[in-house]
Length: 462
Image 1: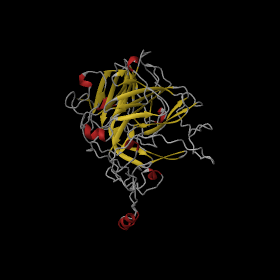
Image 2 (image 1 turned 90 degrees about the vertical axis):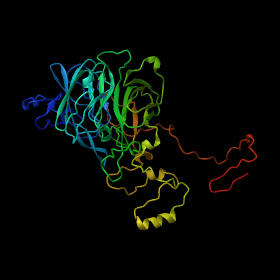
Image 3 (image 1 turned 90 degrees about the horizontal axis):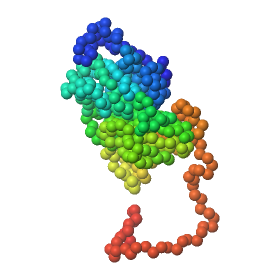
Image 4 (image 1 turned 120 degrees about the vertical axis):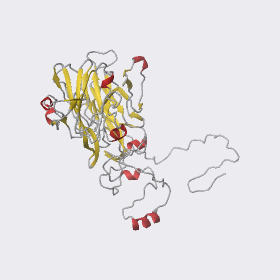
């Protein structure tokens, strides 16, 4: 996405307020225009047109908020408003967000920048913005009722502070946050170092995304905001696999991935085929003596983890949350386990009352990945996604790191499925015509006299 693709719209209404004081109508023209983005595709990096230089991030299925320079200050304009997010093709959810999206746009600045953020409230209730992890004056911390008055509907407030330390941070409301965060109000903030930093490496590709979750009942389009734990839509930047963009790298690239968690549970994020180090948190860069190689890092609630790796193994490598129900779609949590249960007669009787009824899981759940079950309108399938070898049986918090030798520097386009070299793929084993003689049986441990072994559907053997 180029900047020319960003649609703009002016703040509306009269009687807006800045920093809780009235602003004359003539002063409204002084506000920077709030860009809006409605596409759910991953935008390309926004290279800074002015101010200090830096290497920009790529927000997975997101974008970076443009700014204007005024008297040496970077000015941004966030608009809190209802939005409709396409979480996957054909699956749209009513959310609250910023500038047309949930999550809101990523804000990128440089260490030492003075920033001024105008926040216009177009929600039906009051809000604030908390700058999670930032060092700033207390009155700019964004906790409604404690550090500032709430931003009432139709009002505009302004926050201003210096970005004092580099790192990855987040922003979200501290006002009716159970509702507002459950509806998708959140975003990323990146502060780049102002020069070479002893603990922050130069990287070839820099990705960022937020972990978020929603409770959207099948057939509905608005999240259940009173849900505390029983979420059914697990997403990265409000997208679910297979609609999450891949992370693309050139063979040998140093890749940084910034992951923030604003769900209500932890997420063990696992990468296949490579090891990485956690090089930063929302508290800042990690000292080198405190780093170690990992393939999974747990990102707890309200935390950020910055990981770095060398993409030195070509292929399509799975990258996902390791909680298995977080890589599924809209599943029912009260579905009984029916493995081994013959449901044939039961299904016929139920279909007389519910014609579309389908038996689930008498041999396991894998069959659901290839079946086309009838679903209510606007319902994301529980198991979805197709790869070059068949159904992936994945959804939710899942993507792919695609490493290619011929990927050009700066090219973030999807190179398509990986073509594995001959002899490097798991294959079916065909038993030779003359099998080798059986190996002699090894003596096993003596079993207690009363031990019993059972086979499914069989009798106990003594």
